[in-house]
Image 1 (cartoon, rainbow, N blue to C red):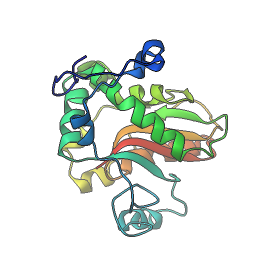
Image 2 (image 1 turned 135 degrees about the vertical axis):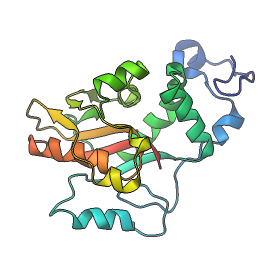
Image 3 (image 1 turned 180 degrees about the horizontal axis):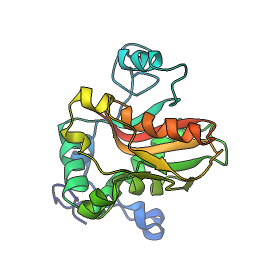
Length: 226
């Protein structure tokens, strides 16, 4: 099999795992996987930002904006380095849906390690795209990531169409209006799922709405920390 990124041949060891499991084979070569920088060591306990502080300045700022931060914490798997930017751009913006499968193993492994405390009734809620954006891209990358996880997925949020987050300044992202809507009450613990954590605004908009509709606790699991 060829690496999904560089197209070099991947040599697989023959094993019962590879024979019995469809996802038992690597989709990226070792060289490409080594460029995916797993977040480890000194990171903010609230948002996974690389820092020597227990809680980074961004999260302290969020704490001052309300009596209680609606988001318990965000856990990100990878740093948003140049290689991850290229990978995600091809997957997310250029429609390479299958490439997203390369994230499954590390995403699920990291989730299982971080969220051992979750109650059995916890659900994964993907950050939605607007109808227009979903039509443009043909798939929702957050939904794909959520479907990888070993907990129930519920797509209970909808989103109004607006300018792409990637086109906005940091200030515009932080002070944007809440674009989400929900039509049901939910009292389960929720893990919001998205591809990138940048300012945390999008996740907090979603978390606030979920809390208003009965959700007990809201966490986030994202692929990369921008």
